[in-house]
Length: 146
Image (cartoon, rainbow, N blue to C red):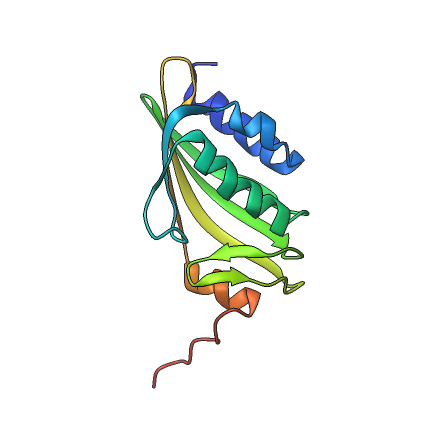
């Protein structure tokens, strides 16, 4: 699977199935992943597995929809919508967020760069962390400015 679009499509399918083992088969051993909730990029398949596995446990009904994708060379950009209910603990930027039972809907973008074998070597995610934390009740609702 050397096509970036195929890799991204498979990633979405496996995420929606909560198939952590299958997802991890898409990552290279030395992959780097940067996300808004991480204080710094995480490096290596094991660290990514821990982060992604924790997320899937916290949101067992998670759904990831690819709204639009653009491929350029070895990179795919994907605009996405995530929905899910947080029924398990979640590692957050300020510590563990206890299960809230709240349903979250979030839009964002993901960029995957793949190697010649189609393995993800770099992943960068972008989403509104304030909106995510507010929907979970882990952060107060921002006040409108006057």
